[in-house]
Picture (spheres, rainbow over the protein chains, first blue to last red):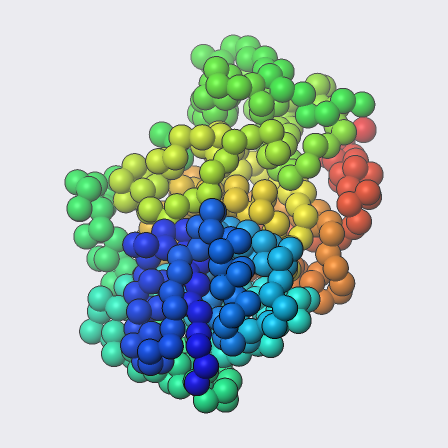
Length: 201
Length: 220
């Protein structure tokens, strides 16, 4: 087990679910992890950090079917200032949709980055229902899969893993509605208001 | 030829416009006082289907005789990154809480029946300029989920089904092009594309290919 760098590519990194996933990963992986949020200003610092690590884990959410701009811009910085010894790259991605496969495009983009820039590719964990699963009775499924994912990286026996809430789609739609209605209530916004069809009303 | 000229806006008989047209009028109203950076023309209260060109580079187009076409040069706009706050879903539904130029663009995306997106490719996806705008367009969706083609997706607000052409330049190889094609197929579900075509070219070929595409709209 070598030292591992965790980089959070979520646009809301400090308050993100990606951060929570990273914390769970760290507790499963052991002591040799170092965690950073990617921000606009810390690209040079993080590029330098990569030079001293054997493995980097990117944790991020699916954004508009692909990589969030926060992460995309960092990868471009990394391409411009690559480390001499390139660490292996693993990916932990989550999306709010039920199907973890919806993360696949973003994973392929990461693979392409690695191929184009000659980084060894490690393991992948794709999480569906990622916005809510950690606060649901199915949290244990996410934690269990993160543990397996972490083990695969620690042992160098890389693989692809995925998990989601084990719900029928129709039930997931209802559960998601309930989640968002409660989310809106925190701001005094009703379900009907959230369902407005108007854009820039 | 001229670039996408700013601030050419003409509105006539707006009070008698049909409902859908009035919504377009409202968008123009938002655009005018801020910067005039979006070219948008409405004439004589006539109804027309809106066509949108969204580009990450200036384009040599003359559109003054085509009131149904809006050309947005994203490089001339100030658009911050989405911060993932969910405000447009849960605090001010349908409105982004970041009040920069993006709030003038996503209503245009929603209203348009025909779109031409011009973007550089990076790692098989849109490069930063276009991707930043597309991420900021999530106010056109609701937080709520529906099932589309057996998959869960967000419910759309008033988003007109679109015929889309994506003109992508700068792909490094066929592998990157194949990945981009898959991305657009995914986008079709989430961006309400009823049909789409993906075209690839070198950067220096973009102006000619854009001309070819808009010629199909009757613009020479």
